[in-house]
Figure 1: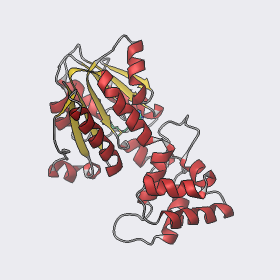
Figure 2: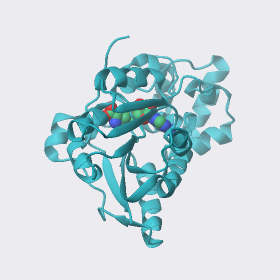
Figure 3: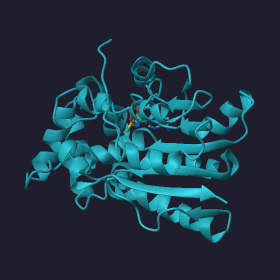
Figure 4: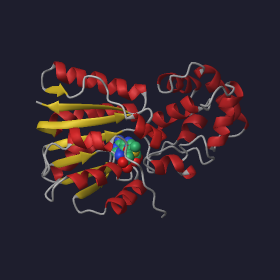
Length: 292
Ligand SMILES: C[S@@+](CC[C@H](N)C(=O)[O-])C[C@H]1O[C@@H](n2cnc3c(N)ncnc32)[C@H](O)[C@@H]1O
């Protein structure tokens, strides 16, 4: 398998805020290609451990090669299963949790994974290849109302109905099987304007629906109170407003309940320099919270 790497976003800022105990136990809930974990381990002591979770088995294998450090303990599982899987290892509480909720470079740049509008590939978009529902399942079998709902709720797409109707028409002729076919269907009702591809919101909606991303983020957030030690911290990086809103509101609730304190009142964003070097950082927002 070819080896891919991922430039970790806001790695230094996250390490400064998250790694409060040099010999601590941490969870990287979205290990990806191990970019953050690799950097964190350069700043942690010999006794430190990072439990790395990813739903994507291919990414997990690459992360192990990229990180190549026995202080990383990888799990092919969702971060929402962290409390039970850690408990099986005899670990009840950790010093810090990172969730980086974007896509890894491997997923975005590998046409076979079907996440990118820019290159043609199968209409897949699953993080976990064992997931029975792919983007193709959704566009070819879901009812019109459900397509409209996900395009509206997960894509914040104002032309949801027109796009859903165009998908229904196209799939009557022949099932949609590639990213290019779907992008063309969307473009047939939403002409190109500016730099952003008109199917961007549709792709976002399908990815979220296929991986049940928002439900999983909610489950992951709900694990934080029981998982973090006193003084332990969680850092969450989001890349679109739906996820950022969930994180912001949940953190606010925890702070109001008096069991957590917000480390940053407003979301932190990457520096101008970082965005110049890595365009993928441009929509990132970071929120950090501490268990009191
Ligand atoms: C932006 S990438 C992480 C990149 C990583 N921080 C790095 O620096 O290499 C996000 C990763 O989260 C994974 N992922 C998405 N949902 C997940 C979940 N519920 N549990 C575990 N991993 C998940 C994706 O498969 C992807 O590899």
